Length: 389
Image (cartoon, rainbow, N blue to C red; front, top):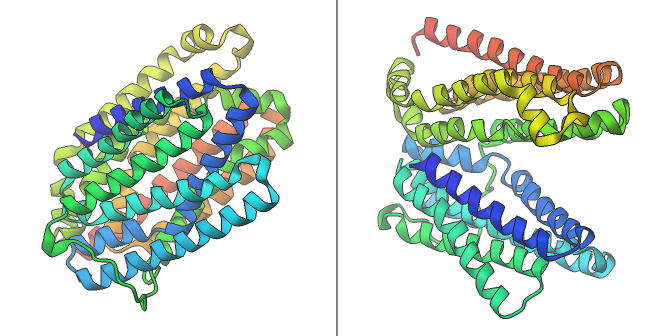
């Protein structure tokens, strides 16, 4: 259910973006999309792994509603202050860039994600699925309404995203059982990021992977970056199934009484990542024909890049549940340092291989990263198994 609603939500969002792009010129659209991307990126930095950490603590009954309320309020207050400061500064000094839009977009997304935490921690994935869908449905409806009153397309885009997140945040809070529902305090005394340090390091390391394309552009040139950029997002839909699996399974992994019990619980949902792996295998087989049809013969070199990325994604689909499982079993420190080491190796390989092999070198770097992570996770899991945790 979570995978289906997430896919439908992404489809609605894609339609909103396409309609906006067709209704305005590329320069104006580019400024708006860049501002929204900046706001979305800021969410990950300010969250610093707290949502995942809180979900685990709720599932293990290690955090009270009062403490959660204090920390959640503190994080939203900090995000709100940062958002206002960003709006004032960017509107004053960068008024023509629309970068001030990142402020309200980031604040709305962060609030929505934070208010989903109790539902996720309580394993109410049915309500989480509805909440995910309600976000984009509300955004789509408001996008249509704004169009009917002739609001500018780029303004319609960011406003509807903010409204959608706010509606979903309100619903998520209302759907949370009263005895587990966080309240908002006027006095904030708790540090929102307490205990989430290693989760945050993992988040930062994951975000650093996005620098592979800019680095490739510098060392490999515009052609290599173009070939790589043309297909490097094509494997993301396969991660949707695996992402839904780990999102739904996290509270069950965390609340299991032992390592072996946790494995037994998640075994029932393994068909989701298995389906994603099957799709990746199909992509490996049809990549040359698919790239030729979609992109044309000019991008013939992208076929081998896509095949390598699909193979790397297979490893990534295996790694994602392993990572979340280790974090759920309170081994987030190992995960953080594995992720940091792997990303350092990846970006180093992009520099060295990208200059000689171009786009294929960057794809090999990702495959190397996933291999390192798989080996590292396996070693940690074997040690845990032998200790009988």
